[in-house]
Amino acid sequence: MQAEPEGASAAPSAESKSTEPAPARSLGPLRMIWRETAKYPRQVIFALLALMVTASATLAIPAGFRLVVDRGFGPGGDVETIGRWFRYLLLIVGVLGLGTAVRFYFVSWLGERVIADIRLKVQENLLRLSPGFFEENSPNEISSRMTSDTALIEQVVGTTVSVALRNLIMGVGGVAILFSLAPKLTAGLLIGIVGILFPLLAFGRRIRTISRTSQDRVADIGATVAEVLGAMKIVQAFNQEAREQERFTTSVELSFATAKRRIMLRSVMTMLGIVAIFGAIVVLVWQGAIGVAEGTITSGTIVQIVFVAVIVAGSFGALTEVYGDLLRGAGAASRLSELLNEKPEIAMPERPLALPSPGRGKLSFENVTFRYPTRLEVAALSDFSLTVEPGETVAIVGPSGAGKSTLFQLAERFYDPQAGTIKLDGVPLTAVDPAEVRRRMALVPQDAVLFAANARDNLRYGNWDASDEDIWDAARAANAESFLRDLPDGLDTFLGEGGARLSGGQRQRVAIARAVLRKAPILLLDEATSALDAESERLVQDALDRLMQDRTTLVIAHRLATVRNADRIVVMDGGRIVETGTHDQLTRAGGLYARLASLQFDERAFAAEEQN
Image (cartoon, rainbow, N blue to C red; front, side):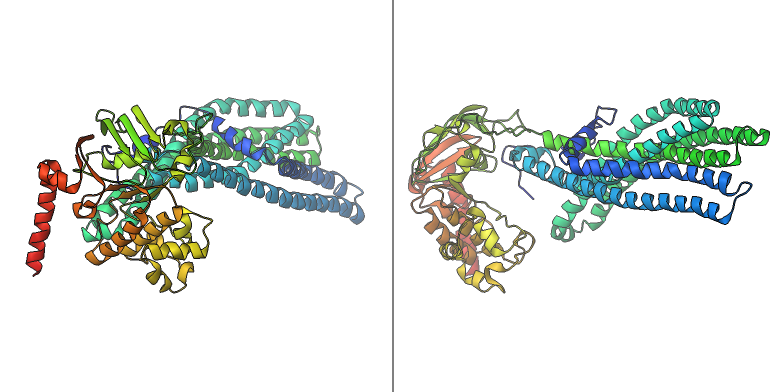
C-alpha cells in the first residue's frame, strides 16, 4: 500500500469516481472496439464471408424442405427423387458446419487479439500517467477494469457481434423470402416488429446505464478483495475479520441489487420482443394454413413459410438479447476508454532541452510553492528555496507533514509546482524530458518495493542491462551478497509477492543494491533505516555510506542519529525552511532541531539504561 504524500488529503474513493454513469445513451463507445478490430482486415473479411455463408445455408434449408415435400412426397415421387433432394439438404448441412467452424475460428481470434491490443494500449497509457492520477483513482479498481471489462469486450468481439450480424442477415433474408412467398402477411409481420422497436430502444438506453453501474459494482468487489488480501496480517492482528466480511457483503449485495435491476429490464425487453415477433409469426402461419386449405399455396410452401418464420423469429428474438450484451460491452468500452484517453499531467515538452553530460548532480529549488491536487487549500511548500551542490549530502528533517517527501516528489517531477522553478544542473525540469530527469536520480524508499520476480530482476531494475558481475558488485556494496548467495537458486530465486521471502533488512539492502546499479549522480534516501532493528540498521547504514560517496545526496530522516555527519541539515516546518546548519550548530542554536534531537537522544539514553 502506497503512503499518501505529505500534505495530501485522502483521495476520493474509487466508487465515488467510477460509478457515475456515462452520459452517452447509445452504442457509441463500441467505436473504440471497431477501430481496433479494423486493424485486421483479412481476418474480418474471412469472418464476414463465413458468416454470410452460414446465414445463407441456414436460410436455404427451408427451401430444401419445400422441394422435398413438393417433389419428393408428391404424386409420382420415387426413392431416387426423394434421395436426390435429401442429398441436397445434407450438402447444405455440410456447408453450414464448415462455415460455422471457419466463422468461429476467425471471430474468436479477433476477440482474443483485439482484447490483447486494448490491454496493451491501456497499460502503456497508465505507465505514462503521473502518480497523482493513482492517488485519485484506486489501482485495484483500475485492475478490475483491465480484467472484468476486457472480458466483456472479448465476449462482444468474439461472440456477440458475430451472433448479431448472423441473426440480422438471417432475419432480413428471411423477411425477403417471406415477402416472395406471402407479401401481404409478411407486411403485417413487419408492422408488428417495427411497433415493438420503440419500447425496446427505450429499455435499451436504461439497460446501458445500469450495465455501466453493474460493472462498477463488480470492480468495487475486486478492489475490496485485493485490498483485504494484501493487508491480511493487519486485518487478523486487529480482529477485523467480521468487519471486512460485512464490508465485502455490502459490496456483493450492492452488485447483486444492480444486477437484479438489469436482469429485470432485460427480461421485460425480451418478453416484449418475443411476444410481438412470435405473435406476428403465428398469425402469418395461420393465414398460410388457410391458403393451403383453399389451394392457393402448396404444402411445401407452407412448410418453407413455417421454417423461415421460425428462423426470423429466432433471429429477431436473439437480437433483443444481443442488444443487451452490446450495451454492457459499450459500458465496458466506455470505462476502458476513460483510461485510454487519460492524458498525463507531466508530459515531455515539444522541444526538450538536453541535460549537461556527464551529470554534475546540482539540484536547486527556487521560490517553489506547491499544493497537492487533492488539497489545494493547503500549501505543502511555500516560497521554498534550496540549492544542493554536486557531491553534497543534505539531510531534510522536521515534523510529520513539514513537506519533506514533497521535495522528492517534485525533484523526480511526479508533480510540477504552481509557482517557482526547480533546476537540475542549471536546467529547469519543465524543459526536460521527465524520463531523462529520473535517469539522473536513484531512490531508496522507506519501504523497499520489490516485485514478484527473481532476485536478479529485482536487483537490475535500476539498470536492466547490468551483467551478473555488475549485480554481484552492487550486492557486495549493499551488504547483500552473503544472503543472496545463500538463496536456494541464487539470483534465480523467486522472492515472492513484495519480496515476502526476505526480511525487512534484506529487502532494504536489495533496494540499496538496485540504487547502486542505477549509477545516478543524485541519490534520494527516504528514511531508509527507520523500520529496521539495530543490526540491520548498521548493515544498511554501512551500505548507504558507501553509496553516498561522490554523489549528491538528499536524506529524509526522522532518526537524527543517522544524519549527524551530513554536510548540511535543513530543518523544515509547515513547508518552509526554519533552520539550516550542521548538527553541532543546530544543537547549540536551541531551535526546533535541538528540541527534536533532545527528545530522541534522551529516549535512546533512557532505553540504553533500561537494557543495562
